Length: 525
Image 1 (tube, rainbow, N blue to C red):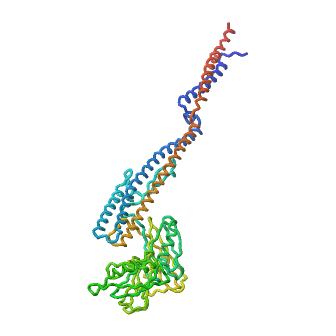
Image 2: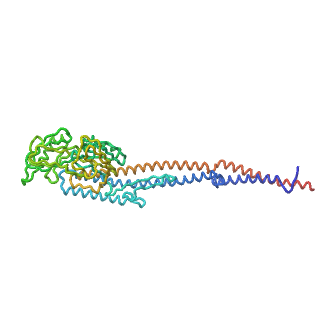
Image 3: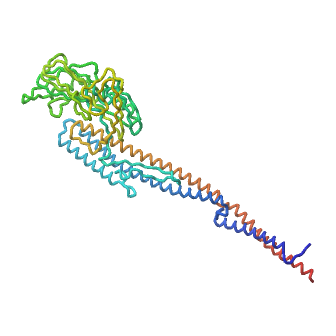
């Protein structure tokens, strides 16, 4: 066996073993003290990179949870203020119902209108002052609020809020061509295809056959049949005014809901004072109480001037009125559409019958009014194959939705968009027509508020679901990071114990190895 003085192989081996055991002991003690398996990138480069990515996701999820809570409060705040607006609108509707009573005096109606104006002022105040985090949210200053609801850029939720100033919301309305003759028609009056593009979707309907005039009632019914798919509703109304009455008895014919079965009725204005006028009130009451009104669905009322009557089909049936029974007219009568609000007019709408006339009549279609809580568009195309020909003596000046053309003509497609009729336009003092409009406006406004509140409620539920999902993500991501980063204390404790014992053993062996070279002295004695 060789003995060396300069190189102690046994000591070097013992030192190497001691260094390794000390490294194990140091690592185990560090992990036990920090409870982390990875304390620096060198401990596990790949694991460290994964841990950093997990940490970014976890931090993002944690902040997103706070953002979602912020968004929930936003939705709740907007909803609570809209609830206040809804309360004012409900009160306004109650006032409109109160105003829709025959016989109310002008001062009584004005009192109700003043109350409505006061309620509208409160709606305006709420809309103008409601804010969240310094931003107005109900007056169009802020139309879309975005919340980051996740750790990544695409994890966002937008909360839209509409404009609830009294001049900006109500009912979105589009008037069809107004009351006209049977050759002029309401919108879609001669076999037209109508496309309604509403906020819920688009639907097409075909009204009537080519060349056959459709009533406003038919049009409204077809539009309402697809309301669930478009969000657009329609109402129809036909009004015909008859003037020129004199004392005596008139025998007239009337068709409306009884189409194809004309009914004779006698109309007898009372002589008025002075003699140049007549009193139509009693005759109007008699007509409304008769079976003629019931059978035709037509109600009679005085016109604004009190010198004529208005025949009204609230359902929008065509109204045909004329001379009947071969009895000569006591005085000349004039038939014309009443309350026409369309964009196009022509002279063919008026029918004048001279005194002594025993024949003559005119049929009128009604007007369709399209309503929706949101903007919409109506596209109308008339069928090109018209039989028999429908020829206009005076064509409309611009393309319309119910054009009068020869059978061989190709009719121009017309597109029209709705316009807003805001709640600020509610007026219960201007007569029955204004009250009907008030109902439509307030119902549209209530629907708009209800839709917005439903959207906010849905958003709150969505935020609650997002919170649940983020909580799960936080737990899962933290657990996944822990599997990689955290130290196994049981394992590290055993390693520390083993390394500590081994370190003590290595120190003892190193002492023995260092003493081996003393054997050389025995050879030198």
